[in-house]
Length: 89
Image 1 (cartoon, rainbow, N blue to C red):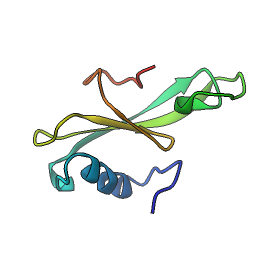
Image 2 (image 1 turned 30 degrees about the horizontal axis):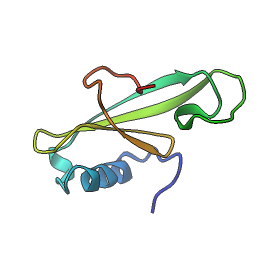
Image 3 (image 1 turned 135 degrees about the horizontal axis):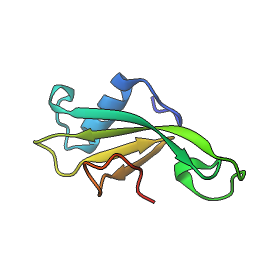
């Protein structure tokens, strides 16, 4: 089951495993950090209140996978600026 604001690392590792060519979670490295967005819409963009809002970002990478990926507030992205810990804008 997938939730928009998922923060359970075991569930996120399962989802990351699917996105990283079904690599077993034991072979996935992960990081997590808070990031401040300039809108209450966070990483989703769009209409949101004009208030600085903090969201938790999770990064996943495996030496056996294709590309590292990021997760934040229900959104998955390729981690293009790896290993910089910042949600790409």
